[in-house]
Length: 132
Image 1: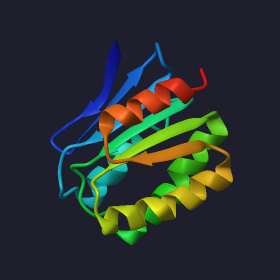
Image 2: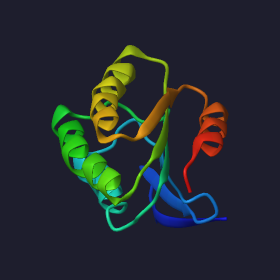
Image 3: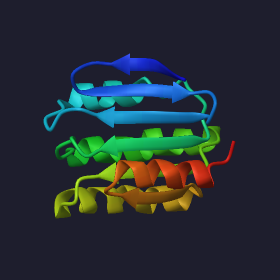
Image 4: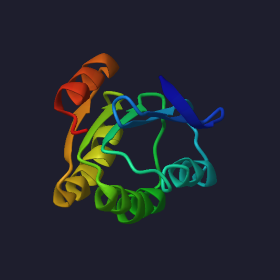
């Protein structure tokens, strides 16, 4: 069973104690910077080992927000014990570029991460590779 941490028209953040899994589902193509950051801020107080992001409905993220995410959220999550991450994206070159930039940072942090375009395949991989 998952616990909803934060939810609005832009995103949903939930946590499953059973799988020690934090999940972020993006619901809107247009996510204002303040909402993007507020979504991630809601995760900062949590400690989790496994992470799943569903960004198929998410539009482009500004370079400033991406850099903030990389330097703040990714680093903190890895420092707190994040070990495995699966990310689902729409199959387009802009999202691939965005994720490849983040992938470089995540790789350095030692987190095992894989990018998918299919949610069910991502969740299956994550649960098979999770560290709890």
